[in-house]
Image (cartoon, rainbow, N blue to C red; front, side, top):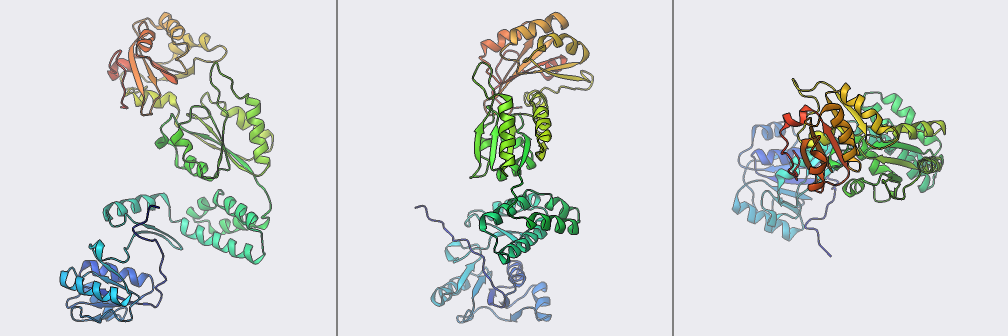
Length: 462
């Protein structure tokens, strides 16, 4: 067993005697924190900061105008030594150990029976962050990030859920039904309503959800996973993955993205791969409807953006016709992310002011290439690798063989690679560099303007 250095707890210090040694900035911060927790605070120091003097004048703390003496910790529940005096540190530690008082000697981890974490306050929600004393800076940095992620609406949301929980328990609602209600509350629009100050509407929605705990209200979220890198997922996509019961995902979704699913989520690979046995689209839609009608929260996770050659529009229409609630979460399309990751701006001042997006797969794909190439300054062709030679031959006849072209493989992933050249040379260059699928073809003067190394696989992201 790997042991934790510290056991995380939340202490109830309301009306409990606590002692702070020292009167400087650190001692002031510690005393204020204990006051916020409702403790009865005694500060012992020969010199107090103006803030501590003010707190003492207002009878919010008891101030003892001298330095620490052995015996000063008698009866304390908890003590913090912020004196920054080594002799006092040693004596206070020895007294606390002998008396069984929890003590923190500031900045001296070996003399700490507890450490104060960085705290994110969204009362009644509290999140404590600790690095076990290794780096208070990192704990504070993480606190700032979490504060930005968890908006102020989380406080009233937690209180609202707590109220619902008490009412459900009073009604003796079974735990399974309670859990179903909590999941529906978490995945509802409650936090959005609270963020917008519509607390009355939030209360009504919570009552509607809690009124029928046994109701199995399923839903499907059609979510774009972006071009590959899980860091490019939207915040909403991450939240839906974390709360999903089922995730039906495409074949090329990165394992790191699937790892963001909740621990109890069931994953089903329904991806389609050219030349391989693939799940029929009708079967995918039928499965989504089946799971939603059974009351499950389902994520249909698609590569890139679900509405850019992702058949998301078809799935949305079929689900709506079946009466299933659907949420759509856009993703970063590979049509724009792949060129950007290779350092190619598909629109660039003085070079290109229009872009067309198409695919090399499906009926009529070759027939529309000439018109699209002539109509736009930059042409992006998705899923181009398998028929690359045929695609660039058509485009070379339309635009001329000297037009710039690049192929970007596995865009935004650690093994991203790209090659550039002309329409006459790009297929051979891609073969020579063993460029793999999935790959995106970019054609236009923007390729030359970007100065992507010609014919040289680029293994790093721009």
